[in-house]
Length: 227
Image (tube, rainbow, N blue to C red; front, side, top):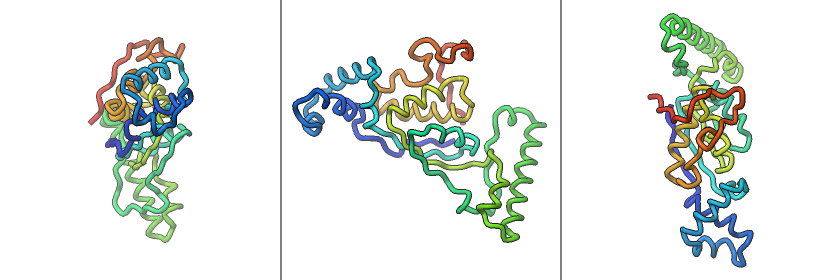
């Protein structure tokens, strides 16, 4: 998995603070952007994050480029609706050579399971190529391609949705691949807005677990990125 931060709103914490402060200011946002002291930015952010008035967080956004993930993972990802996505198309991209398939750790660690997995993905791709060569359009032949197939996607989320995504997907109960993605995204976003993201991630990072009876029962621990 390769996750990169392509772009984010310049000075995201200031942008959020200015948007929130505007509601109570006699001057415009442009003046506030230039004149609001750093200490006031932190004060406004502290009020926002403590009160739960998160609408101002929607004025800053982050765009990530993600390669080397499975279609199984992106099917989960796009369920986060308040975001924008562009994904490599299997309709317009025809594959001449066998692509990379994402192998779950539970499969990779079991030689017998891995052998069956590799045989199945190779057979599916071979059948896909046979359909293409017989004249079947790629958009129809792709029905044979498995969820394990590697894909690429661009993700844009505003800060409010990004924090929500991180809360759900950094949790140890999240599926392993989307959790790896969420942890990588958090690692890239945190240095750009350290106050906003200092407690971002699974809910147990901030207090009691919100999973109720489904809790893993373990304290917060940021998992290392898989190589």
